[in-house]
Length: 180
Image (cartoon, rainbow, N blue to C red):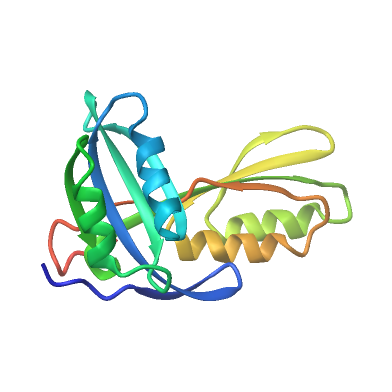
């Protein structure tokens, strides 16, 4: 297997290089702990980790692991994962060949002084307002990691922002030329 080029982009504030692994595992107690333990024992840095049942099937889960390419040789990571009994399949996804998405939720205070600026940031990011009261609003963006980075940076200008990101999920593109 030829290793794809790692993601060479900017996330939050630091340039990083990542590999994306899509790992199909048996949906059993302790599998995620064994995967995390494998990474911890080897000193590999996990940048992002997302887990959910795969293809609507309760028997398997898909684990999307974004790995810091500087901390670990990809072949060693894949080799170690393949040794785990509950691992069914591993796909190493090059960012150019993958559809990646992430979810960002943020809650921030609004008043007459900043309401227009907040609404402008939300509109420019193609985010949506999902909850509102007299003094705050919550926004959501489901988009590429880069789009989430841009919204996160734009929200830094406001005070008391509560922000949470899910981490990436990814699947192979259907064709090499398709782009969304």
